[in-house]
Image (cartoon, rainbow, N blue to C red; front, side, top):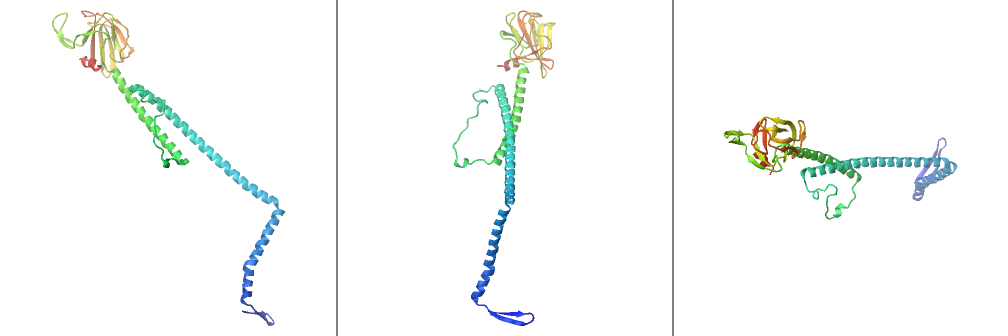
Length: 308
């Protein structure tokens, strides 16, 4: 290769011939040696600058440490907030479980279930083989999601059990206020409901109740819960107690020797309300027992049999 050198005023200055080897050396010098020289010079200049300005390096390192420290503080705060949220959720779940336990114990008593079968003071028995695929740790997001789902399920079960409790209590209340059973603890049936021969006139007459004979002064009991609406002597009945049970039902207890309740008293099923006597139109110690539905006397026989 020939290179012609020219001068602006004098023309040609000389001719330079370059071989292939010289061209290769020239290119290597330009593309390798020269950049390496600059890099080497820059490194030593930077090193010299660091030695000459150590404070700038310290400031840069301190700034980086401060940034990392801030990230650690933020991560710690976030972790603390997450733990507080999880602790709050755990407390809510524990409160749900306490309410469910109390509700379950009430339902066990209301339904008269075997406590050994439904023991709310102990964890339920569970088990099963452990699978290899089940040994993985649960990720935190999945754990939080599971807590939220469990909380929703507990809310739903609580509402369902409260409805069930209300239904059971209403059912038991209906059983308590509906007349059922005998009005005496001891005694025998001496006269039925309906047409019979009047013991005083010998004529056919309608008997509006059932008579239970017994010993003078024996207990007369309420056949259902209710409120006393009458407790005094009454023509033909002698000393009479009348109890309103709601839903249109009332009961009467006549010929009492002694009345133990007063108007306005609330009585329970099976509570002693009077003592058997022979007051009024009576031939001997007994209680005249009537059941009224919306003010009309009905046959008490089916209510007496209902308790058997």
